[in-house]
Image (cartoon, rainbow, N blue to C red):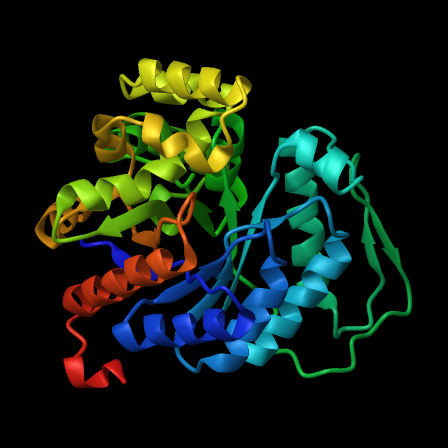
Length: 349
């Protein structure tokens, strides 16, 4: 099975982000995904929903613990209404330091906490218009609402929820409780085969369903250039960013890239700025962890996911790059999506 092509738009302004989403829609991408770091995932998803008419809209991901589950559910319902039923809610735990230090929110036990968050969100979405008491009790999340009835039109009473995971327990939770799974930005076909899919299957078995009911989405930084060296160098910044994180040591070692991780993390601890770490990353690391190269090389790397993932989420490289260089990289991805989807070239504009 050939994976569907989805996309993570980039824009320096919200207006440019909306235009990039329209470009992805014209090219034939099936879903546009929006992250949460420098912008709100739900606000950007809403802006993109208002600017488009066909492409699916999703958060990849919204941080689950920094909003109440009720607010998460209401925002999801609003975006689903705005998009005419095109919304997917992608949720992730984030990391403890970000949740506690940046957002002053409760971390808890992340797997159990996310399971409870999703249960509350689903309960609200299913019953918001019914007028029934909304009562959910959990260790980390609870909801006690009486006399609440949402007086607005509701496109759906069930919304697809995607779970992002890296560790084994969170990945298994996606198989157990998610409608879809979203991988880490660096997820090679080998890692997907040997580490991710077995854990998703384990989780699916716990809930008594086949893995095929889960929409498995692989995230991939994509850099395309007629010169493969230039393509790799654009993507190296992203690899360097993750190589600077100590908790990814095992991930890099799995790919035979322990030396890259050690070299980059040591330089980062020594004061090298995050946007300059790409120069310390080997071409081998970029090849193993991203989809980079000439157009033909990129198509070949995408083909390696056939039969493994249901869809691939492509994103342009951004780390350590000037805005104009990101625009060029994004434009090359749109060219690729047009070619992969077969949308006629006259539909570009």
